[in-house]
Length: 188
Image 1 (cartoon, rainbow, N blue to C red):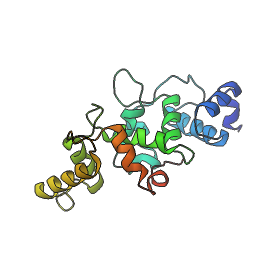
Image 2 (cartoon, helix red, strand yellow; image 1 turned 180 degrees about the vertical axis):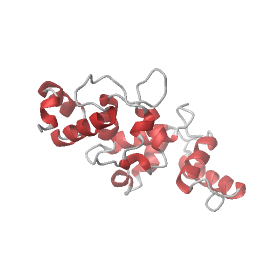
Image 3 (cartoon, rainbow, N blue to C red; image 1 turned 45 degrees about the vertical axis):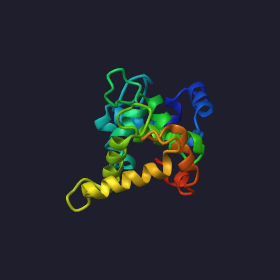
Image 4 (spheres, one colour; image 1 turned 90 degrees about the horizontal axis):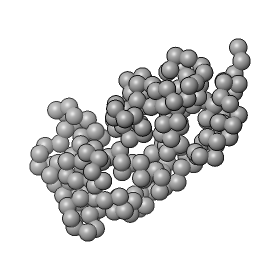
């Protein structure tokens, strides 16, 4: 039956260990899972797996930000959320227990920046809240509740009072949240 270790060249494995926060075992498991999604066991390592297939992973299936996660980590010129194996490793590395607060908060910010403009504005915050609460009639906030919540978030986070939260303001808020690092993770 042979393990996946023989399928990933040693030089690549060493390079991936140096460039990510992942252990050898985590990289080999990621390779196995990615290969299963790809439908073949050997590279090429640049071939892509569609976002739809990536989203079948149990670790992502119930994450309310699953599509944004794929879009943020995808290097596809088509902006379709598809991932190469290296994109997949980057994703797992950022969500690993070993990733730093700075790395995790950087990617969390990008995931929450729905319009990719480099700031979290009221529209981004509304989408963020809706992802967290669900968008059913039972769980959706009223317009007034949403307005008040966004106002409170900006009051607490928008240090320069420009009506948006930039990356450094976001990282400042996250640095005061002790549970962030342990909750911002995906483990295969």
